[in-house]
Length: 102
Image 1 (tube, rainbow, N blue to C red):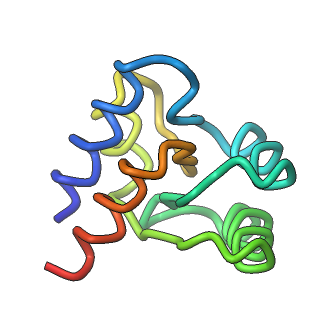
Image 2: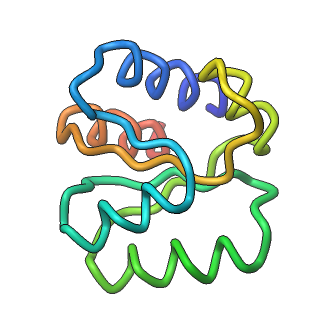
């Protein structure tokens, strides 16, 4: 499942148009604007990241997906280690949340 999560996020990132937001600060900013449909948090995210991102996502009613570790998540997106990724595209978010149900 983790490979599928990274693959779907990579598709969203390569498509441009701000469909995917990478990094804790960007994810928090977009959550505050109610601009995200899903948040992916690295499986090994720090407690501080979890508190900052998950609490805000829950308050906004945004689903949270637990992804692979920060290194694998960042590597799959062509970035350094990443602890949080936000998904602004509704269809992409449905695909990620749906991957949990499979």
